[in-house]
Length: 354
Image (cartoon, rainbow, N blue to C red; front, side, top):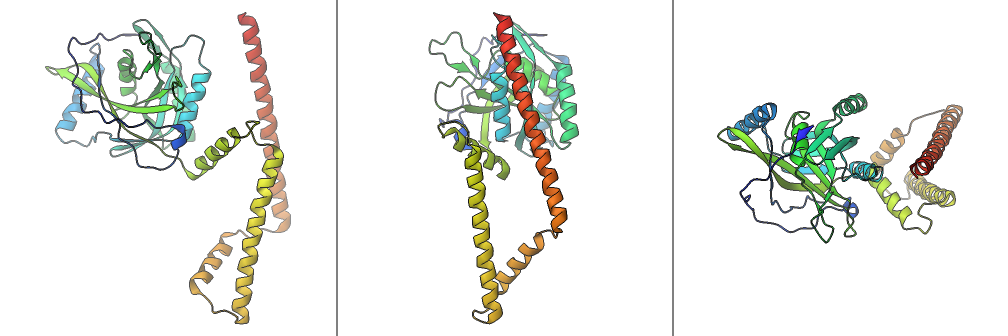
């Protein structure tokens, strides 16, 4: 447990605000990061010997022109947002917000967040408890699967503001400084704080990223100042295909594409591939007959394309295809069993809860 901070009796400095819309689910394209308002949230934190030494050392290193470069850009992959939303939907009844660990890599002043996992925690009044052992175990498992990923920060959903009559949520709570202090000991560099607004006051799911700067008085850190930094949603080619598929499925009346639609899409794709092969074959025949002159660049492209196709005997290809099909059917079967088991468990919990 940590003791909660107390508010400072002074007002924090207010930088110039730049009003821009936050990142949304519909903005999953590689657009340049948007600059957001950077009004700081100043939170008084109980002095900690470990954090004080780290904060003072980090501040001294930055001021002396050390190797530590302040983060100015954050790129978030769609899987991270989906993981946070799934964690929020599965939260315990009465829980104000959920938190978790962010994984990724840092390159200079840019941080790329590629993965995340949930961490159990409890906030009761002025105290915060975090599942440290669970966090370490999950981190060890993730590192085994993705050795290049490291802890780059933590995420949280926006906390409902009880004093706001409009039901607005606040991104930085009093206990955020304490949780940030915990993750400062888990990260090699200064942690990034990602906030996801799940209140759905608008049609957008807002994302905001913060970095913390220690406020020291006579060499003793007394508070953390959270500044909002640039954030952009970045998706790889495979992620973009999945997101487009999800958006297309959501636009249908049934909410999901049927097997018939999937078969039709595969048929159209194969017809396009056959048409391109026929066009290429016709071009080669005309060049051989002397009907048209040869194009060296076109010939190299055709040669590279043919060389990229592996040479596999028909019987070997049939065996590989059948084995992959059996694996796919097994995965589908196991996923259906898991879905059924989860549904039964939820029904039992609802019945026992009543």
